Image 1: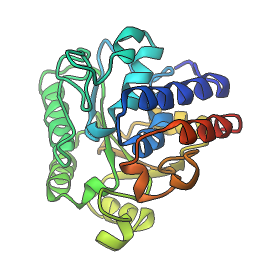
Image 2: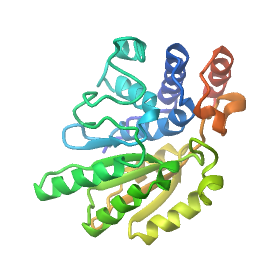
Image 3: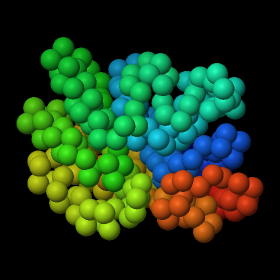
Length: 263
């Protein structure tokens, strides 16, 4: 696999994301920022659109996916500019016809991993090549369906399933720790106890992120926990619950532009 990424390109992508939020009035900027590096690296020499599938479970942060897909030529810039407008193709959650390799409209949290496990089993039964990448958030793993799906995936040895969890330590009501009682280390131990192959890395280490996203375990599903920052660069909203809901105004936008210089 050839690495096809750079810090300069990522900075431009980050600005593109903030611009989308500013112009469209979309919320969920914080979680979109935290997952952006994962999607960027995944589509920088790893994801094979001809045989892989993407289950983007945390669909409320779809602006990050839109920006990466536009960067790689899967959707147009005109689609991005009209996002969330009346009659627009793109809305606040991914449509089912977005791209062929992302077949589900998602964002009702807790269901993505079940869909991914089903797709992974289907590929195995039909002897098809390719991987299933499922993108979730750490708050999402308060949903029982996630654990049922993981149990199923381990039991059926779905080694073609790669689960990536964006661990920004927040969910829709408060910090993950306050709501459920644990953060990254607690989630890691629980996932491992279910029998998955679990690794973790920091979202800022692009080389290590690339290496971990290419990893495949030949016996069980692979889980990558990515330590990220919700709303990175959003001034007083960085690493806060408010970044989940606040709209990007001119002040936040300008602060983010300054942050982009050092990302």
